[in-house]
Image (tube, one colour):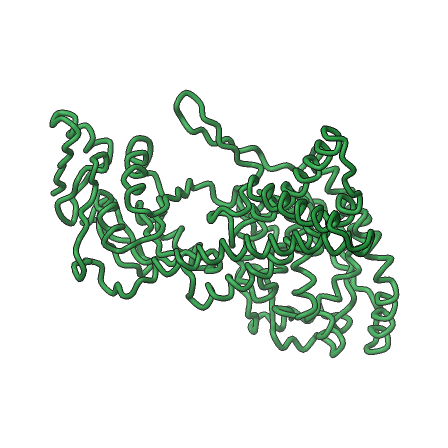
Length: 518
């Protein structure tokens, strides 16, 4: 049974604390989470976790320190060299230009630091470090303007209009390359944070499945703690190391870096006391609130009456942001059509010459709010391919309502190349101009697919389908049906112009490489 040994709390209060902590049968004697010592430090060789070896957790913390300071050093180098060289080129080599270049570069680095661009939690994962670079550049511009006005100083305009954008771009590219290297190492099982997931079995299964599918985020699930040891454990194949009341001791024994709380078994005072206990272990506390696929600007944390209230704004399908997205799509489609016009004409000619039939293929698809439209593609199959599909259903390699065939006999030789590199999708830029599609959005579905949608999947129709999307940069035809739906819903719930730009940037690499195309 749990042992409440809180030297700082009277015995009568200890019983109340036990209730607040949701204490159940534990794997061994446990101290109260609210005590000054909520766990016991064991000597070498006494760790109870099976299979524990080496100092993997400590090694990651050391790697994180190296990653952090190498980022600072690289930023200082880039932010001092870029403005200095530009000033030398524009105004000649003088000590004054050297001083301006070094000073402005250091101010930029300081401003990125003010925007939390060098905090460990923001480095290597998520958009916060890139946002810090952008805001740091804006703050640097404001600082230079105030300095020029306040001290009547002649700040070089070369720096403001030339060097600052270059520095912001250089830092963003450098961080992107650094992150890609880190993500490659994590996919190989290196540089991972040793993670303990706690909560009920169903919540643990969901969290572990999601994190295992995205190893680049660096969570290595090494154990779980459940509400009661007598209950059936999760089905994720991770060892159960104790009950909820064992968490601080399990963290210390297993040298965990992160504790993820899932489900509703730990809330309120229990979660608060657990955070106090984990502060003494050095492990980070992460709470998975269960708001699946909702993040970013839709979620706002508001402290009210001693509570942390999470506000979830509704997904936007109309309004000013939607109008802004339409302008973005319209401008992007016009520019793309102008730049790609020679390629489009050449592809159309090759399609016509390679097989009998028209260059363009028109197919009825379902758009926003269920409205049907004719989607355009370069023809990649023989004429009458849709009528032949019924005879190929026994060979279908896709799950759900989709139809996919690796060696589809209906695909022409030229069409196979067009599909691999998504060139057959380019005419959909005309659909974007018409307002039927967007540059980025969910995959445009067929009518028979929509007929099989459940309520949740039907949310894909809240926004316009896209020429590209999360599905395009995450596997394309290689994605299972459920994963494709999950990505589409993630976009619907969290779309933004910034997310669109990120997807478009990654789409270029996917199209060039042909990865996942069929």
